[in-house]
Length: 235
Image 1 (spheres, one colour):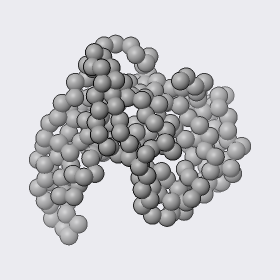
Image 2 (cartoon, rainbow, N blue to C red):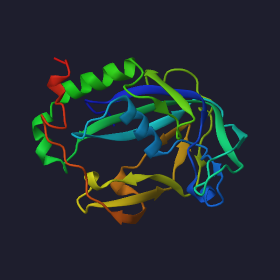
Image 3 (spheres, helix red, strand yellow):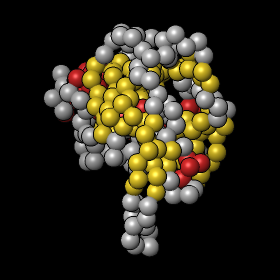
Image 4 (tube, rainbow, N blue to C red):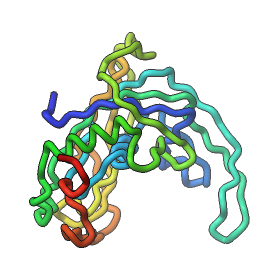
C-alpha cells in the first residue's frame, strides 16, 4: 500500500546486530537473520523524529546474502572489570526500507504541529543528508549509513527465493506515549520473507504482546521543550 508521506531509503553497513533476546541470558549476543521492526524504526528516528509523529515500517527488502561473523568481545561487568563474550554479527548488510509516518493520537497537545508537508519535507531532506544523528544497525558498535533509493531497484540476493520463514521473532516495543494504557510492552510475531521482501504487520496486529511495566510518557510543550516544524527553517 502506498501512502502520501511514504519514504524509501537504503540502510547498509559492515556489521549489524539485531539481538535475539534469548541469547542475552548467558551474557552473549547472537543476531537475528533479518532486521527487526524496532531496529528499522530506530534508524528512521535517528534520521528524523518528532513526538508529533509515529514512524510505521511497511516493508524491508534484503539486498545481500545473509552471513554471520563472530567476534570476541570484552564487555564491562556490572561489578567492575571485564568479561569475555562471543558476539555473532551479521556481516556486510544492505536493506531497502519502505515506511511512512502517522500522527501520534496520544499526543493531542501537539496537534498544532501536525503539518504533513513540512514533516515530510524535513524527513526526506534528512534521509538525503544521512540523518540527524548517528545511525546504528541494531547496536551502537554497528555503524550504519542511509541514503535515498527507489524501492525495488537493483538485484537482491533473495529475489528468486519463494518463501522463507523465521519463526517467532521480536517485533518491537510499544512505549507509553504510543498507547493509551501508559505501559511499556514487548511484541512478537512470525515474519516470512517472500522473494527477498518482508512485509511487517502493524504493531497492534502482533499475535503476541507482553506487558513489561507501567511508565509515564514525557510531556512536550511547544515553545518550551519542543521546537515546532515551521521553526526549523522548512517552508
